[in-house]
Length: 458
Image (cartoon, rainbow, N blue to C red; front, side):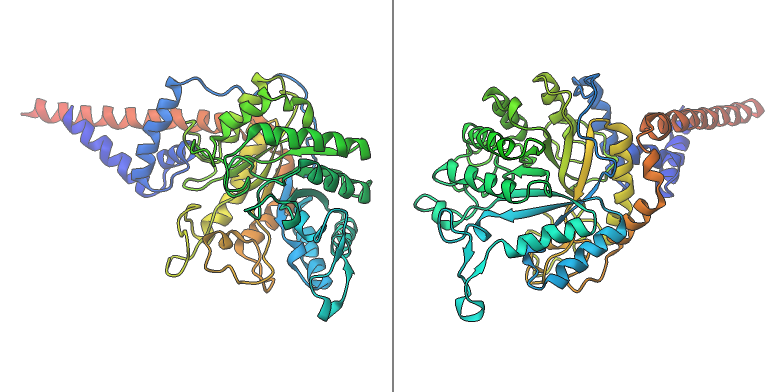
């Protein structure tokens, strides 16, 4: 018996070391690539079956499921020259993306005071100009390249803030934000359809230095929803994506509890699409460990469970930000080096199609995913770990992640990924697990026969 166990363990380690069939199965339940991490992850995955699983189906028709599910976050407003904005959108279009998530920073549009949409920050160089000019150009270019846009409305101006304000915190008077959002919707009616109200209100610094306030965000969301719909009834309003966290410190709030509090405050009638973040962080896109304290690519399933329990099964989830961070191997001079996980560039590129295939084949309620992010205007933040998520460098040199997106989208295979019977993990497992078990049985039987023959000869 002991000999059989030793032989089986040797066979297992040989398989894991050479990325064989057992490795493949463990990779597909843990998202881990190293054998030791896979074995630990396998025990955690097995524990999943001792807990109540999130309910995600709902058995209803899901609204707002775009034909093209590929999006990317952009910072087009940072580009000084219009030709650079156009070059970004041309590359985004060439790769096959259908969406951009573009911030319309309130502080960059209604700059100097309530109702003042002129920019006087560079009087000596350019004089007084319309703060709208840059954003009109961005909207024109998105239309030109047939790219749908999610306008993220956030970042309040200094004049709107209470004393001792922080740059990202909510305004002293929520109505100022509501008026700004309505003004944007009115200006771009018929050209921008999708609006996202704020970003990550459950954490510092996005909700300022004070305590997070689900009642305050619920008020902001509902009033802004009504204002935008009054201007443009065809618009689609997205709730802010909540940051994945288990903190309960006061200035940060556990995302699941925060979402339930929002429902308790009556937000169900105040959004059309629920947004989520789906960073892989410390494991790959195939991580199926369902633990409420684990931040992984699978985490949005818990948000879906909360939606169903609150009567919103018909609404989709759209991923606002997702990705894996290929920071350099040398951490010298990089702040928060491993805060967002560490992968190499080849892994980050490999994870792209795996993430989209899993999401589209397993999550019928998932509308689209906006990858984080396309590019920054310059490399001033090269000492920040999050800088390395980029698909394209500031000089427009594409990374392998960009090339991976282009290959995946242009292949057209993704159009079949919503065929769950063909592409789901369950089908993959049904093909692999019996072979593995059969192989283990064959090894055990062979060892038994050899040992018995040896004993009989003696």
